[in-house]
Length: 316
Ligand code: PMV
Image (cartoon, rainbow, N blue to C red; front, side, top):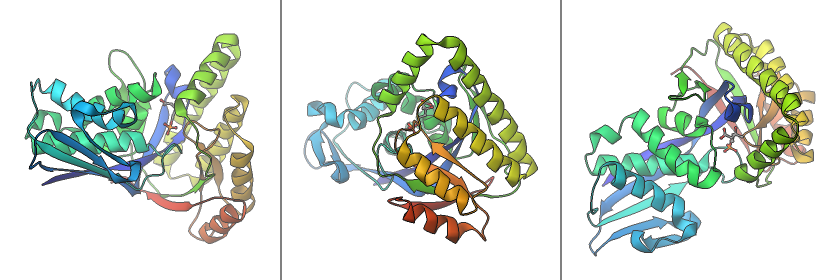
């Protein structure tokens, strides 16, 4: 049996603007993970099993609903130029909440690609770079025009400073001088990344000047945030989170439920808080000190957060 996992992720700075080539910062959320296992199948074919998603099907018969999982398997098959796969059972499970900005789709794909490549001893496909690039191909099916940040952070499993570029994305790692203690509060509202990204594109097409300025602002904030993270300046990081949230509001990707959680966290003493991911639902992230953690957690729950995760981001 071969097993591989991939973490969830949170975007700290620069969502949406990253689609338009501005830098963004994302971190792995290692408390939640997707896991894929590959074993030999006693009967013919490649069987795909995802109990959480009520999927149990043969690869050849995979429907649109199973498509992401099937697409991950086919990516490996195509890249390795295998005319046929051996008889296998591929089982996937995940405790990353879906459609909430924590990168569950990318993590499921990355774990599947890594487990299958290892099982078939396709070592050239087991590097972080290869897993990231194949995961990106799967992401395109769901999101249309993903920036590439999700697949990068779940495959590399490190904080990344990311810029979408041709012919190759710029991916830099950086030093987290003081650990970042994040509370991740879920509004419980599902949101389609593709729908929100499409809507931002329509708004950008209608008023390019305004949206380019908003994206520039997000890019400047991400660049400044990287320096603040390297300096260990938690106050400044928090301030920049609030500033980024302001711009996301102007892009109309915030929502009443998100604002309620952000206000509650800030009033309870968070250094900064913002939505994370596509917005209009999903999660908020709040930067806290150890002393304020309980107060902010309670405030998030009282304000309606369905779950509150703690994630401490270090350099390792
Ligand atoms: O909602 P998520 O976690 O998939 O994040 C989307 C981030 C965007 O910047 C809005 C889109 C992208 O592809 O980077």
